[in-house]
Figure (cartoon, rainbow, N blue to C red):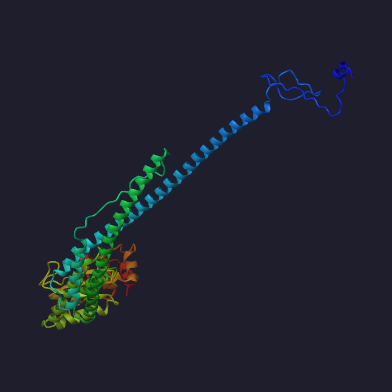
Length: 425
């Protein structure tokens, strides 16, 4: 084979030609379809640049998400912590306010009890009160006085606590929560102190209440026995004793009763005993038999109205030569009256003077208005609460159409008035 064929022909089997590789700066690796090297440079592919940009953008977004999550997480945490601290601070303030108020109430009650019951314990013990009960009351009063020593009234105004802070920077939130924690600790300390003082006051007050109740029970029992046994005592004295006893039924250490109430029971008991002694002494008076007849007659026509009697040389300034009397009536306590008569009536009664009997009837007529069925007549337009015309008309209706019935003093009632008053019989 000549040289030209060798250059332009097909390479013999077994031989292999490699295309030269460009290694220049502008060369791009790779062969053309015919195995020749592409001599034109190719621009770098866009796929790598897009990936790089997307990677950078993704990193930025991820970082922002992480930062946003951290911010959101802190915001939620800070809000929760400040809210819990606020609730605990509010609860601590309320608890302190409650115990402060209760302590103040207990201190006021204790102070009153100590002062009030001293009014009773400073008096001589009544003979009908046992030594043990009196001593127990005095001792418990002293213990309560010691419990109040050094205690002053305290007012607590809950501080203003913000529910949350607008500034959620970590240092601000931490300071806010720590401030609330300090407040809670201080208020809890005060609450415990005042609760202990309250407990001591309540224990001493309870002890005093028990001993005061025991004294009241003894006085009440003796008073009730006196009201039943002292048959010569006036009803008025027994009414006062009954009121004194009833005043203590709601509690001895209350501001409405206290030591003054116990003392009042003792005073009322003594008054009933004194009235009893006076009543028994009056029965020894030579004039008593006639007075007893007059009183018995008055009660016999009183339709169950309880009557007390008093006797004096003069009544309403009238004595010798006059028949005179007065009546004070009371609608409460079952309806009762006190009739005061002068001494000359005794002689008129003994001599059978109708005017003496008429005057007594007139006074009983005054007392009839405490009866419900008679009060309506007394209040009607016929009388319009005219006491004297009513009593005169009632005495006339009872058969005493004479000067002593009240005609001489007040004039004669109308026939209508006499008829209306006559319905009260």
